[in-house]
Length: 301
Image (cartoon, rainbow, N blue to C red):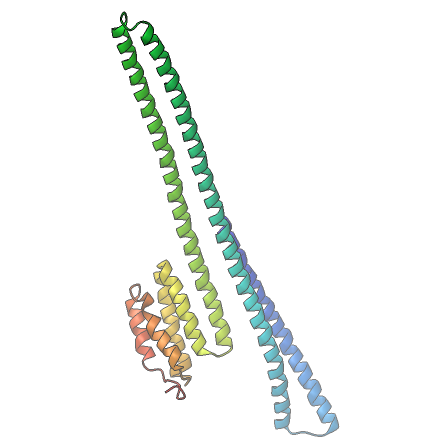
């Protein structure tokens, strides 16, 4: 588990370094845009005089071209980061499952071999003892019948004691196996919790990508996916934060921004919005109320 958390921390640092690198690229790109635009304007001025509006148009065209290239590069970097994090999480989960399964199978096989060996030895011992007692009984049955009976009773007592010892050992072995299974279940729950938390963080990064591209419908869908992951983990605080983010997006992008929501997206949001209602009923009610004021895309209606 410590290795899993260290890996997740490394992934977070990788994403932070990628974002920092993108910021440096943004600064370099802005400088390049300014230099190219000034060069274009200077070249244009040397050829033919142009108005200030034409200069602004040339500047805007060059900036739009460079910004499109920058956004494409930024999106590619974010997707590669997300792919790396998902791949690392799946590898760690698979390794954990495989390791625990091998330990369990090995313990079960060792217990079976040990139990078979003890039973075989016990059967051989009992058989040898019974044969010896039978020969002795045949030789002195009339003279020593009472003594033989006492010996048989003593042997039976030893056999019963041996059986009790074997039963106790087997019970202890199975108890150890049950404890190992309980530990495995605990580790499995912890792994699932880590996966859910990682998915929520990744969805938050994806929301920023859609926000940069100004696609509010995709932002709402991604928020619902993060809400499902937080609800499966029982993260009450995370659910409340996601509901608050939904309210902010609905107000900023739809109420104040004038965007219209696609009918299919609206249906999907309404159908899945209540996954976190039991953890934050107030937030669910506010989001539902704000969602009722969103305008539907006129083409769908």
